[in-house]
Image (cartoon, rainbow, N blue to C red; front, top):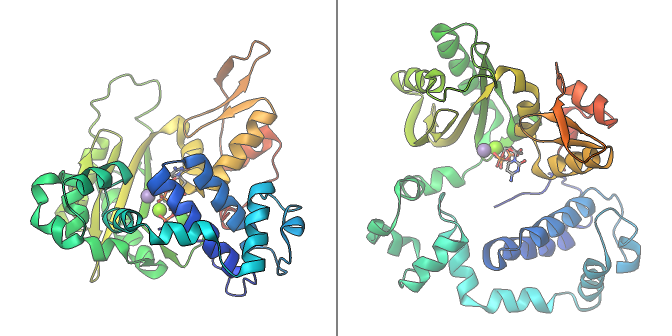
Length: 329
Ligand code: DCP
Ligand code: MG
Ligand code: MN
């Protein structure tokens, strides 16, 4: 489902394709997230490399390409294909898993369960919705819509409506659309909204705040939100619609004092987050979606550092600032 950074003149396209196919296999079948990320990272590196790779040896000089991927590149250069990819394609179970996991809410584990029950196609799923939970039923209902990328212009329109309705409810809400949209992409897989409010901070221990619920209700009343997959006190998953198609919408409520760590995290990309966190660790900091903390001499993280903007986070860990559009790795 994942896409590479768009690069129409990618001279290493065919390498990227087989690496992404192997990545999907590791995620969906082997359930090896480590290998999934390694293949994606290698593909991303090759996609932005301006010259065509001529050997594994040459590729090994690049970021994220080691011995194993280098020898796969050699095999592909020499034979025009990869034995491993061929085997994966020939195994029917893999293609059924790939079909069933198209449905939002069906992961590899659920797919294997369904296969054991004799379910192999989308049609089978439609006949056996009793085997699905609420999320999966919504995923099946909107299968086509959710698989269709959202044009930037449509998210811009949704943003306008959302801002006006939420500000009408309470003008003190902070609202930002993160994810691939904030990274400047022309198309997104879903819409990732982050909201925050000065009355809600990490020091609040009560988890019964109605902020998110109120926001969701307002967006439902104006018929922007058309479906709820799940709603907790800080996380909403559902669907919204302004044009022909319904779109996957995620909304998170973040404590006011953790806003910028959340913005950074939710902007991604996920590979960028991984790199930045690794860099933070190397410099003696621990970074997550909530806080940035300095790791003390005893190895224990200290109190959360004061963060007043995204740049602060880059500064603390001595990482050159990257604009959202530069985080598309
Ligand atoms: N995220 C992360 N690690 C994950 C999942 C998500 O760091 N395993 C963060 C970075 C992502 C952001 O959350 O950019 C939003 O997640 P999405 O899955 O919505 O990814 P994108 O918005 O980046 O891409 P898409 O256009 O496919 O939605
Ligand atoms: Mg997204
Ligand atoms: Mn999302």
